[in-house]
Image (tube, rainbow, N blue to C red; front, side, top):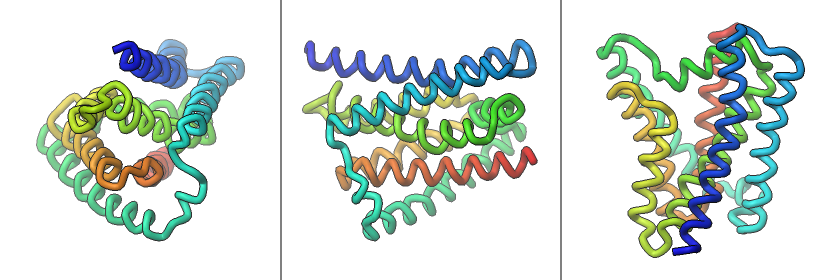
Length: 217
């Protein structure tokens, strides 16, 4: 029981730190309409703190090595996963269109930050930090730590929490984030390699980041 509580505490600490990094920028920008240089530096500092803590944890747990990202077989799985995610995104966006045409709240929040933060920071956070900490928390700590011995339940709980933290506000956004959680979780459960689900998560976020960046230009 104590071990499970430690895992849960670690997940909560990482989650809070990550939310502070983006939440701080969101709150300040929402109040003032801009971020001063010191405020941007604080956002950078919080984001890098989360990144370093997660990297330290990954190295301690030996979750993957750099060579894992170079295996052609892994990237074939990533490519197939991304094709499935394209389909899920199409269905989710189509449903949201019928629900009133609103985009997912999480996407709207991120899009608004392009006026407040540099593209470099948003790239760091969206493409690297967020996928890394989310995969560690929702695909490793919760299923393998908190629910050790009951991993199948843990993957379901981790997937539901993953969807919830992305603030789904309608059925279409539940399809988007619930579908993503299902694909990421199934890949890690099936292949037991966090590097594969992480690579897919990063690729998917990179595509989303580029789309938001092009729309902002």
